[in-house]
Image (cartoon, rainbow, N blue to C red; front, side, top):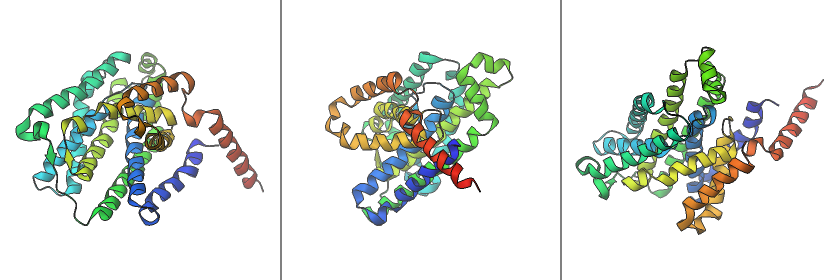
Length: 321
């Protein structure tokens, strides 16, 4: 069965259900639905560079934090909220384009270390530049009027739209020449260069695609919480969570990151919330487990392959005259 058709078969009902939560569930469930959409957008963004290209990026929190501060500073300067989100997206994309020329020359664990160091560098800059960023005291943002229920709906739908745009971008990229080039790079970068793939341009494009969605998530999250500080905006835990979600669902697949985000949020609320002091250690164990026992993610596991085959048989029967 076509992976796109199979993915849409379960993704569309999930998206509809997430959109209906404000009308059928309480505020806690709406909040969890917002987290699913937010993490799905982040996992899909990581998938461009980590899944398709095979570069183990740990710079997610850098772009999230940069988007959060850019959006917060613009809102505090009087820029309307949605316009501030758009500007933060551009800032994150431009920063990634400039950074990509240098950092994407590294490979493997060198790239992983270099990418995670960007998070720490930006955290130190925002902590020290107190005249602009508020330093360790952080920044307060205008609270959205209308009450908690109205704000919950606004930010849920903002994250939902962002997730849908990220899915659309993934599908378009997967079917484009860029997607083909990124898969070639993931298989063998030197061979891809020899057969005519513009390796540097493809890697930078994937890096920028990854960054712009992270920047938007950061800007929306800052408005949602109405407060940001360097440790929260540039969170190492966030940098670890996002690759785990993508790998859990299936890195390099169209809808695997969405499934991974959904499963991870459920796990986080039922299990990880009871072991807050050991979050990073548990995340590390999950990464090791995924690498050794579930390298293809849930969508490539035997269970989902069986479900996919059943659906393929069903549709083939329905299409026969």
